[in-house]
Image 1: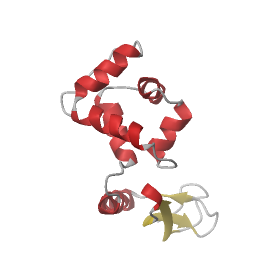
Image 2: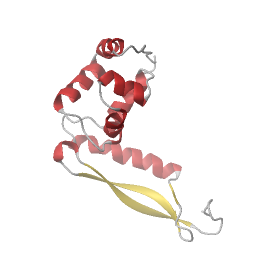
Image 3: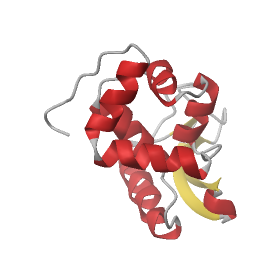
Image 4: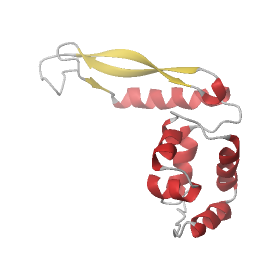
Length: 142
């Protein structure tokens, strides 16, 4: 496949490792992408994306009771909240909340338990949102 960036190079499959550290445990996931042999531009093709999602989901078994970034994103999207709004509801900075979603950091146990409670009982998130002066929506499909 030709490179869309330089129009002359050819894309070849390459792998890279993304590391996660839930509960001080190292979890390495090998992910796929395509790299141009001419300009070095990288891109992820549809089939690679699907395989990467499968590989990322497979890491859950190594996490124990630690929530994955996808868990935070699903909770936020279920209630149609932006990252700044979710951070406000949880009483953390936007930067801190974004780090939870990206798994660059993991919350302390008390915050994790609060988030797990909000996942299991939506009325808890509604209570916290009321305290933060935010109105919540709830998507039917979630």
